Amino acid sequence: MLNPLRNVVSRLCGARLHLGITTKGIALARTSGGWNKKISLLADQALSSDQLKNQCDALLTLPSCTTLPLLVTLSDEWGHLFMVTPPHNAEHYSDLVAAATMRFQALYGKVSADWQINADWQVDRPFLACAYPRSLLNTLQQIAQERRMPLLSVRPYFVTVWNQWSSKLKPNNWFGVVQDATLTLGITSELHPQHLIGIRTIAIPTHGQNRDWIAEQLTRTALQHNVTAPKQIQVVGNQHHYWGDKAATPVVDQLVLNLVEQQNQSSTVASLPQILSPARQLIYCGVGA
Image (cartoon, rainbow, N blue to C red; front, side, top):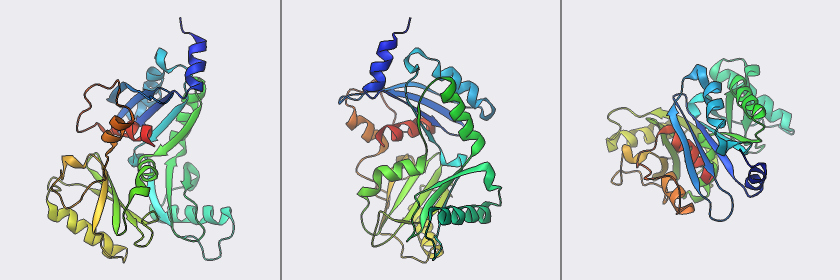
């Protein structure tokens, strides 16, 4: 029988569930509270897109999951990431929302009412916006409500790692996120590397291990955005699978995997692989954020 008091103490001490969802996989981990945070991998499995609710229900019925707060990280392929330039006469939040809605419709030709748009709202410079299907977000909310789990956040992967790593960016460097054969480039301001001015998603081809390929992508992206190509890109994710340590794209000092290991030397996750599954990559970055 479950001990209700133990679950209350777990919630008060900061125990959390981290759910990572890609279009092909789903992973779940639990972190303990306190100073000596531990992470336990509970599941990592393939996902049938039409079985999302059923699979989540099955995972969250585990005794170790009962009523714990839930944080969800979604892969970027579920939605859309795009930049918005605020109107010159913008004065109110509603002006920024209208600009983001118009930009979304212009880029994707979709009915904005079916999508939830959130953004790093800025009145004086371009800002990053993300749009995810309301049906997906409603399903996650329903799952949490039925399990009586506080749903603390639902975050896009790029936004999660950007918030985690942007303070470490150096001037004239761009930010990159590698997941599931996709490179998402965050083009940053030369003067303010913590300010995004553009974003581009690129499929990594089979010849993407060629150093010339990544140099070509940086040059092309710089021309498209009328900016100077970066000296380096600082990358988070499974970049070692493509470029390793000898590429012309030096990585950040700590990768998602290293971050988890350093924050939690006594992790109960045994023998973390060098190449994480995309869904596990989501939950580990969520733990560090």
